[in-house]
Amino acid sequence: MCPVAAADGGVAEFDKLQISYQGAVERETAPLRDKYLVELEKLRDTFSRAGNLVGVNLVQAEITTMNQQIAFAKTGKRTPTQATAVAAANAGKQAAGAEMPELRWFVGKTWLTAAMTKWKFEKDGTGDHVRGGQKVATFTWRLLPSGAVELSVRTAPDKPVTTMFLKFKNKLEAWFGPSEASLTERLHYE
Image (cartoon, rainbow, N blue to C red; front, side, top):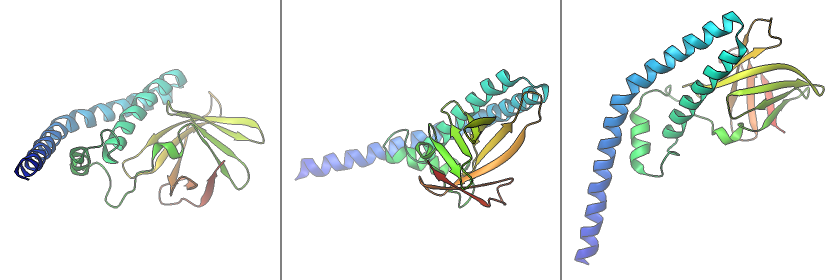
């Protein structure tokens, strides 16, 4: 029994060391990551105002990748250790009470409104808005710290970008609207 107890004590010490390391890594990298995201968002907005859709998509893909890494870390999916979950909980980026949707709920999938308008989400942070079988707009999406998904919708290259928001309740239900506070239209998984 002594070797088992010693082995358990070693695992506990390993977990403590790993938690300490993950916390230190997060404290050191979070400010740099946050500055990078702010600069990426500024660049995306600059490209958007200039009508540079290729630039917008390129920068949005990087923003989406960064946000997905943050979301995965917060949900403990990057690694199955307790240390990752503790470090993510201490990251302080997620808004209080916010629930992060799982990306598998919508990435690579299509969601519909009651009027059968479709929103197709791609892995690269882009998507298509389809009505009556016709593509009516393209959009870029990003996961916000609040758990909402922000959509930047452009109906044509010469048209301005419109922002909409989605909140996924689970893998079968979502709500969308013009602001995070006004999510009034229900979506369901196709």
